[in-house]
Amino acid sequence: MASYASQVKKELTSLEVHPEHARAELAALIRMNGSLDLVDHRFLLVVQTENPAIARRIYSLIRQLYKIEASLSVQRKMKLKKNNLYLVRLLQHSERVLKDLEIIDGQSWLIQTAVPEKIMTSEQRMRSYLRGAFLAGGSVNSPEKSRYHLEIYSLHENHNDQVVEMLNHFGLHAKSTVRRNGYVAYIKEAEKISDFLQVVGATKAMLSFEDVRIVRDMRNSVNRLVNCETANLNKTIDAATRQLENIEYLRHYVGFENLPPKLQEIAQLRFENPEMSLKELAEIVPSGPISKSGINHRLRKLTQLAEQKRKETV
View 1 (cartoon, one colour):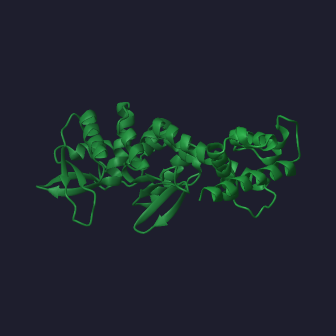
View 2 (cartoon, rainbow, N blue to C red; view 1 turned 120 degrees about the horizontal axis):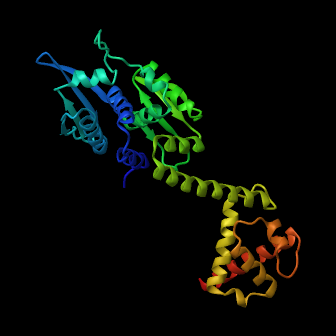
View 3 (cartoon, rainbow, N blue to C red; view 1 turned 180 degrees about the horizontal axis):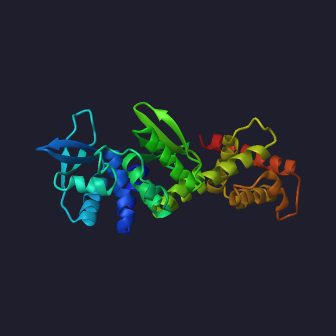
């Protein structure tokens, strides 16, 4: 099963974008994943990635923007490396492409590691550049994981600083850190990661992220609420889970209708409202509001009945 980051990147590589915005995306992909070789007195541009969808994206953007054909090949890695390496090579017209994207200076021929001013001053180009930067050097944890984390790796410090600047232009609270052999711009807040996905155009991935995040947050809130409403604050959420398991056991093996009326009432109420606190349950008891301790007493009785029933069936 593909990782969440792979799903995000697959969606991004399928987006149709305006040619001018595509230039910004391609500039990031080449600046971050490209290299130059000299072959027969001509520059050979090689852009490499482990993701075939990204390789196809680079190939198609070059063809779309410059009406020229690059070559696309696969390089098998050594046995210890799981992923293949996909190479996009451009020998003809590579200088023209690199100059147009302002990756090499037209006069000095020096490689430019900084993001061009025309991108830094255009919100839409910044969106597209960040999309390309994430495709080239980005990763994001699945929202199912215990911690939220999105990052974009850069080889050069000035480029990393500009990535952070672009992220924070959209209010994403990005920070940076030094990583061995490079620099990382990262986001830790779940809400801001969701916002980033929207900024770069990964709408489906954003909605999926939000769905999982909301369920997780709701589950955590319910667990905290149940835990705080128990008589003993040292009890864990496992106690409430066992309580619900006992009620489910009684429903299945005894039947609520066979319980004493007061216990039947509480069993049905707790079964239908697993997220409610004891105080909230006490307020909606059909036979009239009772105290929280009264609810707790009846729940303990249900637990005793369930344990007794289990012993009888052993």
